[in-house]
Image (cartoon, rainbow, N blue to C red):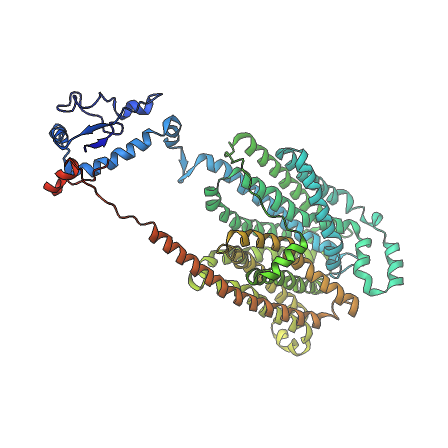
Length: 614
């Protein structure tokens, strides 16, 4: 039986091929098929071995020994030819700068600038909110746990409900402007209107009367009423971080970038964030020191606040302009309209799922333990920070240095994190954050609880035990946060990868619903209980230190347990991949013609051997 081949896909023949013209229809070649609107597919012809040999000499420079190579080329050419005019246009190389397409740069550069402006503002707002609520008259760091639980959390829930409603009625562009413009207006109004009028709008007399009735242990909750405008600023600054960064920016970035672009450029955004942290820390330090150059009787903090809020407003307007420019001049990638069904789990369903899976339970322990631990140390540290720097300008200047150091440490840790993962693996990387937090936390609480015995030692360094505790607490926060951003967060996300799809999606939903809020508010609830039980944060410090030790120990145990399960799942995954690769290997079989055409001729000449089916 003669071998059946098709003329479609053969190389264009010479003008008058000898011995083939009688066998094949006149071919217009590959070029004709590329640009023809309706390419023809002529019927297959049967060629015997003899006829095919008569075709061989008429192709100068091409021998049958190269037939297999030529056939591969023909198949590749055919694949390119069959893609049509649209693929031909796509093959055309687009202009590039430094190896990156110009269309990609038109998206990535404005996104990077937006991210820089958003995080520059967030650092200024984060440092300023602590200065306002901690150093205000009649307030202290004890207000923070109550503020996070009873003001910040309800406001965040209310905002997200409002955002969900607005997203159903507004376009994406209108929604972006509707959300970000009130933030910009509020921060400008606070610096120039609300803060100068704070002495008139704060009910200090009512707060003093209630404090005399309820007792000093209720100073924290009553301070929320006493300095309500500062507390509102605190909440708006917190919402800037969760709403503008997480919802607006990342939602917009995911909308206009492809997966390949995200893999390449999203890590650079993390490095850029720490650059913004460094510059904004220097800005806070500069404006906080303006008081030194002002005359007597001038409120230096009011002047500094106006300058910093002006920068926040300017950066906010720059964010709006960049958003408008990208939407106007950058083409958006086409998205599939198919939607994935994500499991919606309630709180009780999430808790049941957390308890039933040891892997997810250990992962949840990591998330909750970090949230509680960092809050226990941070609030205690800020109370000592106020004792050391009671002036708002001094407090703000120190926070500026703190932000700069945090940015530098995180930037360095991000560069080293890849080496840690490659050299020591997931387990070591997951244990670094709790180990750092434990060691620095022990040093911090030791200086607070046993300041007397350490006094001669720290005096030789030119410091008091209080100042030494402030510096150790600052180092604890700097290294803990840098380890969290560079190691803890990647470890947490990597832990989901080897899970099956159902456990992966449900586990992440459960942790997002239960563990993140529990970790953030758990520390605050513990501190509220301690303050109301022992009268003040200082009196409850020994117990907070013991609670921190227990939580970090549980964190390390969960990390060790999760390491074994993670490595076991990774081994199973690698074994399955090896089995899949082994099963996908196919042994090529060369068949011979019954009438001795191509396959038969190959036996007579090894150089002319080729598979029969072309």
